[in-house]
Image 1 (cartoon, rainbow, N blue to C red):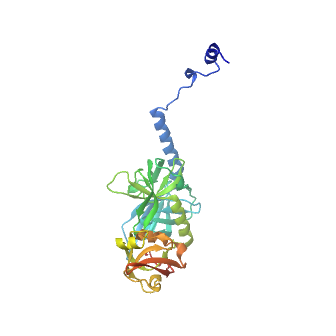
Image 2: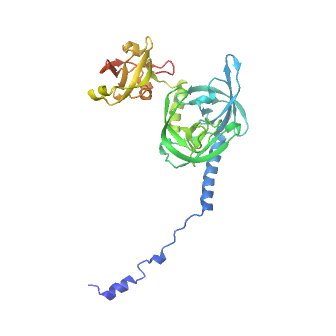
Length: 344
């Protein structure tokens, strides 16, 4: 048994570290933090800027050349494929490309997809630097991001900010929702569209696409994982295949007594307003006035839900469509075909 004196000697022993011997915690100064931030932005800009191009687009309408529009893009393959926004090259007659080193080249549209506001161009006959694509699934809210583009024609303009939110939805000019959109406060202006949004490492994680005016700091980019998928389809097919059933629709509320009586999973649905002759909907004997509430096992509460399920995988596949007809649920069989245009 240890005596009180023995305990005192152990407590005073040098083998037990004292609080005074602990190293003081060093807090970086504001200058050091700002310098680290600056170095991160500088490094990202130096890594990616040489891959960013300025686009001058001359639209061609009714055989006449329209006023030129400008935008941005970036080279993402060694053989000269350039990713940009669909709205930048819409109705393009001629596309002039200016590289960061001042070289002027021409480009052709390989394919565009207004439903995701993405397009792929091809620049030939030049040695080009290539941007490195990252993984947008690794992003975190608050993460530093850098946007590079050509706002108002000012080439290779760099702005920095953070990821403000993830998983946003943004409506494209075609009317479809673009899912998995990145929200950032890195300043964007007209001409930035199509330019890259990159991490501090210089990895592209988004394609800058839109701003909310007159709000400040509400800017959006298409996630690079979406962009990579769409770009691969545009290079292969010139378009993104989607399925089609041939109906004109609108969102409607379901009658509450119908929802309760049949214990429906949705309280809203998609009203069939028109049916195109010879379409899958016509062959399935859908009627104007039917309300779609499910596609196979997917509840359909809105037009956007219907858009999401009508993918290329559904082309030629027999599926079940649950509708409300004459106040009661009914299931019909339908076989979507490939969309002949950007319709449901």
